[in-house]
Each structure stands twice: as C-alpha cells, then as structure tokens.
Image 1 (tube, rainbow, N blue to C red):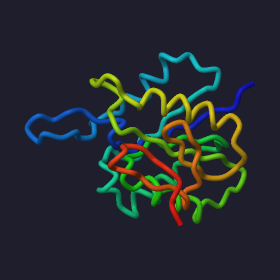
Image 2: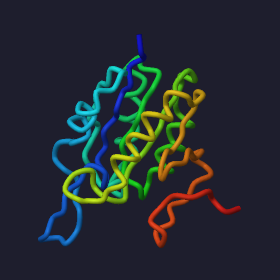
Image 3: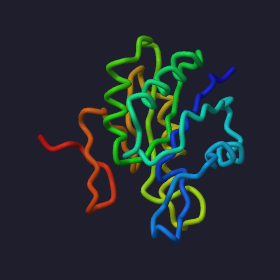
Length: 169
C-alpha cells in the first residue's frame, strides 16, 4: 500500500486568482489544489489540510506554527506544502529547525503563475515534480521548484529570471 501524502495548503500565487481592481493576483478563499490533485489519479492517497490562504509575505509566526502542528498531528511521513514564493525559504528553514519528527520528508513548492486561469503556468509542473520527488527524497525539508530540489538554506528566488536557483555564497 502506498503511503499517504499530506498536502498543507497555505495560499500563495499557486492558489490565487487575478483581481483586476488590484491589478494583481490574490489568494483564493478556497484552494484549487485538491481538485487538481484528484484529477491526476495518483497512486498515493492524498489528504489536505488548509492552514491559511495568504500571500506568503503576509504569513505570521502563528501561521508557521499551525503548519508545523498540521504536519506533526497528521501521522503522515510525506508532506507537500503549497506556499507563496516570497517567503518559502523562510518557512522551510523554520520547519527544518522546529520539526520534532526526523522520519518525515517535507517538500515546499509554489508557482510564479497561478494553477488556474493562466496558460502557461508553472504550477502543474511544480506540483507534479514535488509529488514525484517526495517518493524518493530522504527524510528532511526541501524546496522543489523549476525541476530542481533545493535545501532551504541554499536557495534564492531570482525575481529577474522568475525562477529559483542555488544561493550564491
């Protein structure tokens, strides 16, 4: 039997819509990720825990504590967190420091373009890459973006290129 994958939903661009009155994307009230995952007919049983639906720049310490609690209370050994890209590394580092259970693989991922309403979007690929990667990663906390696995302390968002890359020392 395949292991369960817990999806912790926090908002971010991956789970946003375009709001013309603000000329920007804003997080959906409800996540679209679970509907997307259901269409994929994955072999893993997926469960979903909505912690919040926020732009990652608006995440608080309380939100991060709630993510940590959702992970630790789930009993799942494989966790994917959908997250905004601005503070994804900060959250990954927080979880890396605070997780009590070392027998988990946790992957954070997001998108530069929302999952729904835009074509092309990097969101479907990034979600698929996270699901694939979590099947094989050793225990730990990672960020999966742009077809690459990053350690939380060794990643930077390159806003000019619109992608993540290894942190320059």
